[in-house]
Image 1 (cartoon, rainbow, N blue to C red):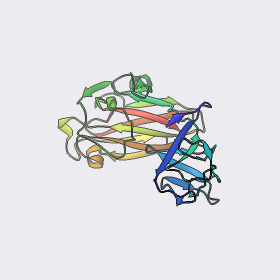
Image 2: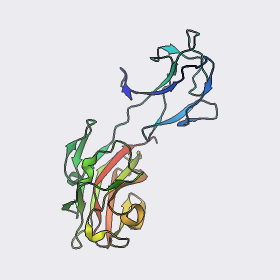
Image 3: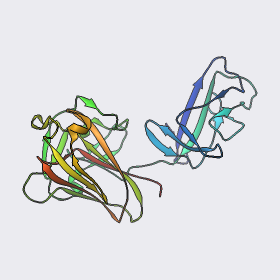
Image 4: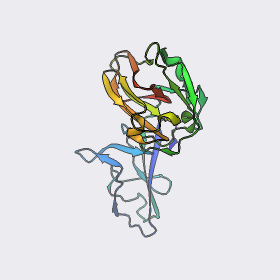
Length: 256
């Protein structure tokens, strides 16, 4: 993925075929077309982007304009000759997370993203941490490129005092995806039923959430919620068995 001069991500799909005919039909299964066969969305590195400004080109370096605004169907390069590589290019808005907060404190990820300390958004409870190293496996729910640093430390809420609560200011009416990252590496909660708690994200509640039951022991995982903000996105945890815990919280904007 490259960023072009107007600040948009350039997403490139490539088909390589040394015997490719200029009018060959082919398609990419990760692309969603609308009822008019125009590009509606595509998936790149496990993250869905919505295409709003389509520039489709064909050629070894995307320098030739194709005959249509489609990423599936027949394509004839403007030079009229068959070429070994055809690359379809589309531009999409740069989508930046609203918040990235880590239980173990702030850090800069390898892609340049700055993660804040999770305590910056803590409004009640949950001021204890534990470190259990890296998980043995990563669940498929975790997006590609998630930094490994988030698994190093968990923040947990003791049984006494207020329940653990976080607040993230987001303008009223805006939709967002809230990603909660969990890794239960504590040896005392390795079995189903050892650690159970309720999760509330805005008006959505998951009761009796059990990390081990959902994802397995020694596994890093992510649970996602799609919400509409009322001005503040609230993420709350409530005790059931043992202590609620969280490794990181990430919030990304969605189209309204």
